[in-house]
Amino acid sequence: MQIFKVGGAVRDRLLGKPVTDIDWVVVGATTEEMLAKGYRPVGADFPVFLHPKSGEEYALARTERKSGRGYGGFTFHASPEVTLEEDLIRRDLTINAMAEDDQQNLTDPYQGQRDLEARILRHVSPAFAEDPLRVLRVARFAARYAGLGFTVAPETLELMRQLSESGELEVLTAERSWKEISRALMEDQPQVFIQVLRDCGALKVLMPEVDALFGVPQPEAHHPEIDTGLHTLSVLEQSALHKQPLTVRWACLLHDLGKGLTPEEQWPRHIAHEHTGLKLIKAVNERFKAPKDCQELALLVGKYHTHSHRALELKASTLLELLQSFDVYRRPQRFEEFIAACEMDARGRKGLEQRSYPQAEYLRGAAKAAREVAVQPLLEKGFKGPELGEALKRERLKALKAYKENS
Ligand code: CTP
Image (cartoon, rainbow, N blue to C red; front, side, top):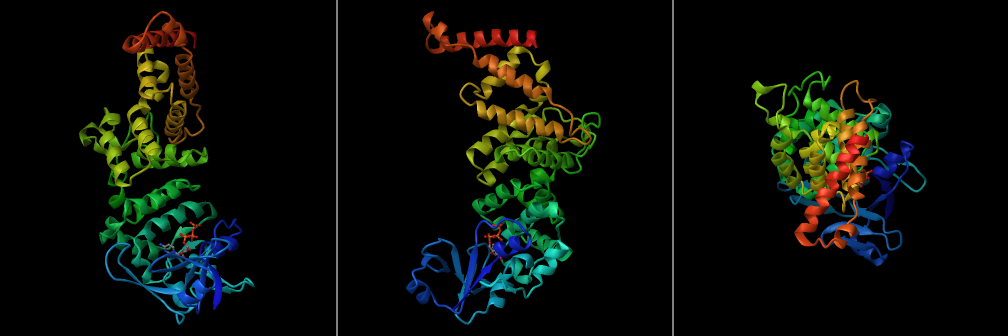
C-alpha cells in the first residue's frame, strides 16, 4: 500500500500557510488490511479510518458516483485498484487535488500548482457537481484567499450557477450549510463569501432576504454608498477588520434585512425597518439552525441598532428600556457585542470607515451607571418581589438621568 498526504495540507504547505489538520489517502489497500494495522473505522460503510496514534484521517482511494439528490445520494467505490489520479479527480478544486508522498514528491495531475500560482479557484472535473455543498466551499475559499489575490474561474462560477439553479442547494442540510457559513464568516474577507454566492445565484436560494438588499437605495446623506447590499458587505468587511466574533459577524450580515421589504415608493427611506426585519432575521436564523447566541444577537441588533446610533439623543427612560431588553445586568457581554455590531454598521459606510463612534463609550457608560445601582439598600427598606423590581427601575432611571446630565 502507498500513503499520500492530500487536500488542504498540500495546498497550504505550497502557499506557505500553517497546516493544521492533515488528510491522508491510501492506495492499494483493503479495509481488512487497514483494520489489521490497527486503524479505526470512522463509519460502517465509509472507507475512512483514524490512525491508531495520531487520530488523523486515512481514506482509502475511492471513486464516487452520485445516485440521487443530496448528500445521502452517493455510492462509494473503494478498492485496491482505484488509482491516486482517480481519487483526485473526484475532488472539488484543482488546488485541493494534489497529493504528496513522504519525500514531498508532488502528484498533480490536474494542474493544481499552476492554479495556485495563478491564484485561481478552479473545479477539477464535472464531478464537482456531485456535492452541492461545494458551491459554499468555493465561496468560503474565495473569502479566505481573497487577500492573496485568488478569484473563482469563470467556468467554475458557471458550474456553481447551474448547481444553484438546479434546486440542488435546497437539499443541503442546515448543519452542513451552517458549518460552511460560520467558517466563511470567520475568514479574513467574509464579504467575498457573500459576493461570490451572489455572483453565482446561490445567495438568492440560500438567503433571498440578503440577496433582496442589492439594488435597494438608502439616503445618500447617511449612506454615501447608497445600495443596501453594498452597505451590508462593507459592514461585514469591517467586522472582520476589527476581528469580531461570529455572533457579531452574523448580526452584521442580518441587521438590515427589513430594508428589503420597504415599498419602492418609500425609497430611499426605510421607516420601521428594524421591526419589519425581525421576522426575516428569525427565518434565516431558523433555516440554518444558527446557534442560540448568534440567533439572539442578530435579533437584538436588528431591533435596536438605530437606538445605538441615536444613543446620545435617547431619553433616560428609553436608555433604561434598552438596557432592560438586553438584561445588561446579567448579560454584560451580550451588550458589548451589540455595541460592537452597531459600530461596525456605522463604519460600514463609504468614506466613513474611520469616523469615531462615540455612541459606544456612551452606551458603556450608561450600562455601568445602571449596573452600579445597588440592591441592598432597597432590600433594607423592605422592598421585595415585584415592588423590588419597580424600585430598582426607579433608581436606575435616576442614575441614568444623572449620567445624561453629566456627560
Ligand atoms: N473535498 C472535496 N469536496 C468536499 C469536501 C472535501 O473534494 N465537499 C476534498 C478536497 O480535496 C479537500 C479534502 O477533501 O481538500 C479535505 O477536505 P476538508 O478537510 O473539508 O477541507 P480542506 O481542503 O482541508 O480545507 P480546510 O483548510 O478548510 O479544512
